[in-house]
Image (spheres, rainbow, N blue to C red):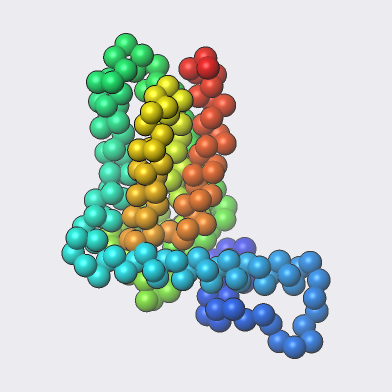
Length: 208
């Protein structure tokens, strides 16, 4: 069942930049509805662009692999890297990252059910899903949210890895769009929420 919050957005995807009929009332509600239609249209165009990677075997395999790593497999790898680089300092960072991930993992399913935005491949038959999904809702991206929450304390203690962390987050966002599972706004919102929640927790946990 599609949330009323996205009924207007879905109609906007069917008519890309329709500004409404002549004589339609122009007020805050009307402008907001038009803005949502435009955002939804741009979102969908971006998904079509990134999902082109699925036409080639390497792009498809890369997107699916990165997405599956984001299901949880990437976090033990990051933990091992922290132990190798930070030594005795690693457990505290791993604990902070784990607390962030746990809280965000509890939060994002509730946000998804509340907003109930359909995934791109559910909304547009031209978008293919390259792998299975953990749930039916799109906004926000749980992969981006959780990964951001894990990366924040790592970067705070190991600032030299900032560029690598940003690159990893961008790769995850690309993979989620390339697989047809998320819009750019889902990824951006997930990363933003993940940062806002995990940063103060990390400051407290790490004492910085």
